Image 1: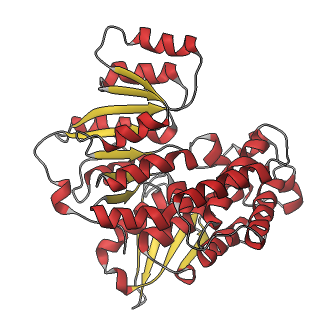
Image 2: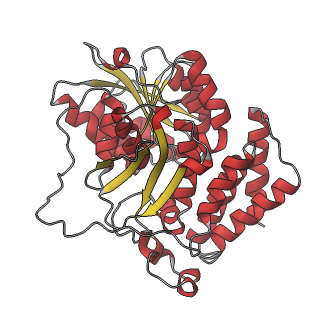
Image 3: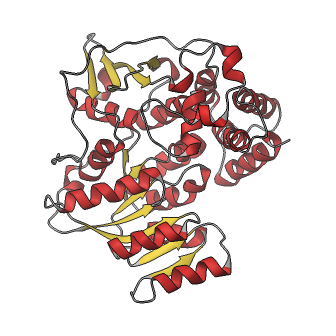
Length: 401
């Protein structure tokens, strides 16, 4: 198994320096909420750096509250917006920086012990690679880093002693359940999926679903990109690939089941037939907190399950209305640059749908078509970083046609 579990790294008698990448997004915001909560329970963290894409107003608010050493805007912003951010922090000693290089440098800093990698999409790859090479404790919610470059990230983590803890609720559930057995004793893991807003819709209606309908997730409150991915089940396809890298499992040992109530976050079936599951409310803060404090557990800030109100837990097999799942298995089987292409094509198609330029039904069709074209021409079986970046750029251009 490739996920490290280092007791020595977790136990400490000083505030751990943490960099939150993607601090203004839903995962980043929840991470800061957890950091505040843990401080009240004697488990303080020192915020070294906060990174946002372009939301300087929210970044400024977070900076005033948490007083980091550095704040970074990773995407280009106007000179006026940058000036406004600097003005908002003029009364502090906080440095204001910009650009991807600054984010990578933050991930490598000596005073950063923990990198909370919650940047959405392939943009989070470079700092995750830097954090792995620097031997950091990585609380990983950026599944795309492993989908695109698991073949690079995991060997680097192994070589330099980095610890990777999953923040996705499903992979956190698997990681927690593994405390009941050894990796060699796994028969299969079962990732649960809510089914999203279209679980019971006929395929004809799904194809023409509106953006507002696709963003209306029944259980989770997340950013727009991942919410659309949940509606197509592409998020589950990416999680299949992520599970392959995190737990060193072949495609045939990873299953998906629809569980509309989102109470069981995922399960392990061991070779003796025992099934161990992790249950809880659909609140990302539980998984975030465990990634920050493992192997310890502390009082959580998530609401508890009320067993007096739970009437049923149901399960369904995903059907042909969700062809995205097969793409995940295909990426595991093919390896190489296939993950980079799928991730980039899906990001592009997802954005096109949210912009009203394509129908909902075209998202997976575009992604699948771009992958097929890549496998027929341009596929690299043993890629280097340059190959992955080239595949990413090609797939984005191809999906946008």
